Image (cartoon, rainbow, N blue to C red; front, side, top):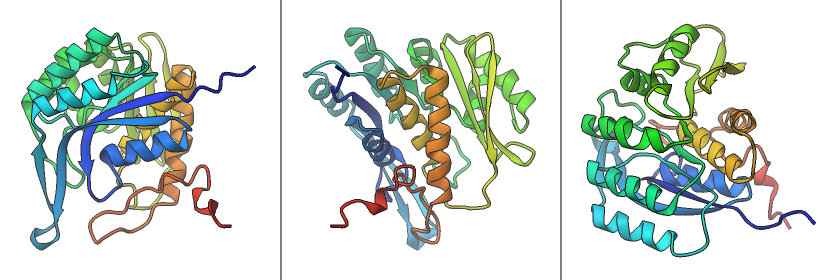
Length: 277
């Protein structure tokens, strides 16, 4: 008889009230994958339409994050977890202790360093703590080109060859697998993501999509990898499926406001056709 147990996945991330990214994107993705999502909220992100859509980040108290994690881990074991925006070094340290204490597996670290449309690193010291504490404990780290540059000490990554160079450097930090989300920012006519396992590079490619409705694509991609691992996929298969899932979401994205257009997380499973009767 097939195992019908619902797999359980945790996201430790910030809240995006626009619904496209952050823990909202993670939960929607977990649901579409048929897994049950838990959350520990690390910060709340807002956008101000009266001041050029400027972002504000409100960190959650570290002790509150600890209590959220305690609640989540009071039940049956998790099958995977992922991170997003982490509000402080203290939160990163608490998460590190939690991973060790509960022997958490299938750990996907999405090293969120900037908000969409912003170019300044939110908290540089957090990037250092992620590199030193979380990467050695992770199954996969999923930086975009900017984040990969920060982790690898490189600037202006834009080619596949530079992605490979960065992946080698990041792998040496102790992570088991590196996935660099190049997407449409890579030079050429293909949206490219790269997987490195320490020995072999695997490229996942799709035609570039001419759309700005891709808010939350990075969060969605990382969440999809975590959910795939929770359901027993290999790393390579989890990344491949996540690529297809996210690409469909981008193809079917929509305009939310003049600043962002989120991906549609239900696109892969045609969720808009549900509950019609």
